[in-house]
Image (cartoon, rainbow, N blue to C red):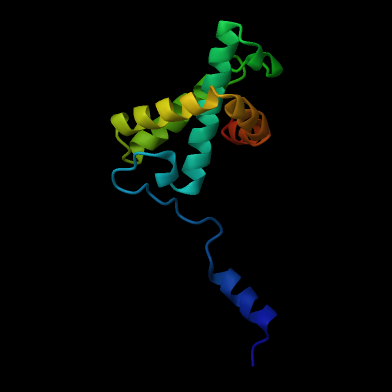
Length: 130
């Protein structure tokens, strides 16, 4: 008779170390339609774009962050969007996703959301080699 701990160990032994990426649903038009890893990367990419826009405009909301463009935020955005297109998401859908998210970021709640996300976004950007 297998103990629950031994059974779990056997199951984990057979599981792949990293799951295969899940392609987005056909016709993904919203960030929430994407697999969670892609959705998180897209949200972070848009957060970097928003912070960069604030910084270029002299908006005080951007002053709390290092120079987004010089620190790899632009390149992160480009890489994330390219991966979305490679996964089959249309340009129109990407424009829709980024436009809606950028509009939400420009609200008072959006600035707070970006502040909360940025530590994780920094880790994602760093993991991408930027």
